[in-house]
Image (cartoon, rainbow, N blue to C red):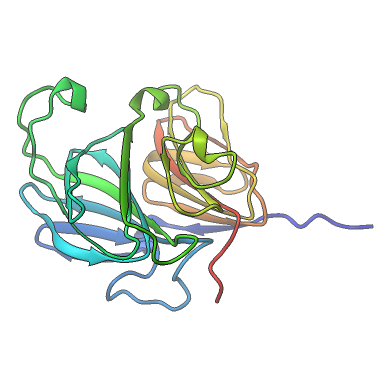
Length: 261
């Protein structure tokens, strides 16, 4: 007779995250980042960075390098201006999925320039002098030394249904159904803008999941209430349900491999 092993649900509360706070930046780190190094908290699955950032108007990250990393930026509020050494530039706003493959090396900057957004860009045409709030996530690519690349796509309409929407994926048979592609065949990122009264969402079944409540409040089967900034690292299988009574925006990483070591 065999006994099924229940998945391990590791809850990480918002207030327990390491923080970087300077005049223009309020950043909270789910994993070791920069000077906040903890050898026991370097990754979960293939996810190495989950930074929850707020940048004041007119400020941001000056041009800096990256290499051999898939970088996904998801804006929750405001607008972030991206520019890189490959000639890509644009405004990232809520509902627009963006991926940068650093590959052999790329330089980029990210600024809150409080741009004037028209209706086609998710704005009302007026200039806003507001902070930008976004989550930036890094996953390791399948192989080092790939050609740097960039991709973005508007998916705001798909998110209106409240279900779990595939935003970024490199998984065979799965990537073509996501908004953007990443260079990791073992990982996919999903987002749900959950509404009160809707049917619960069901987490993907995978050996590694990272569930992050980016906004609002949600309840996870086997855990209970999760507040904004809380995360759960799941090992050994998904299938749990999530629901909300007040509304929530949830980012779920589905991963079928982990980083060795």
